[in-house]
Length: 201
Figure 1 (cartoon, helix red, strand yellow):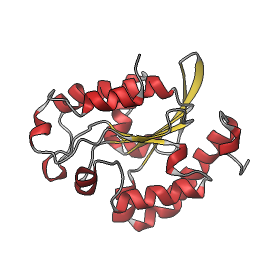
Figure 2 (cartoon, one colour; figure 1 turned 90 degrees about the vertical axis):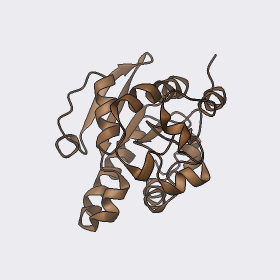
Figure 3 (cartoon, one colour; figure 1 turned 60 degrees about the vertical axis):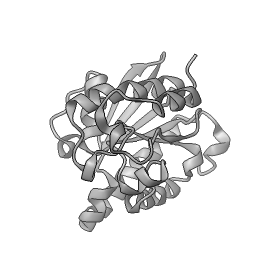
């Protein structure tokens, strides 16, 4: 039976694509196995590769800040990426890399069974939307909208927002980003699993 730990151990032995040859560390993802909300990015960056942890660079600091603003901490959520190894020079993930690596993410989701999935950026949104048979045209077209699907015997919510790196690159998007996190806060406010984690309600 899968657990986040057993999946992590598999990831750290993975040779399914060539990225293992150029990475410093695998970045399996981290967080609460009972998380009500999961944040999914596309791939580790330089700092993530060095530390073996997701979203620990400048984009990660912004993500932490936004998670804190909705009343949670990293320990309350799960944070991961589609790819578990850094692509050289932070290039975009290749289709064959996504195909090879994404089953790990889907298994992690099956362990956690979250109520809310937040897609960070276009690659994450494109993959998750396709997996759940949702139409995806562009990140700007779906950004901030809530899509509900049936999974794990319940209704879950999927929302795509810009990758935090995009907000650092274009600070004028910050206000919109905060509104998107307000939407996320409302979603998790309606879907309390461990009520002690959500004292702001």
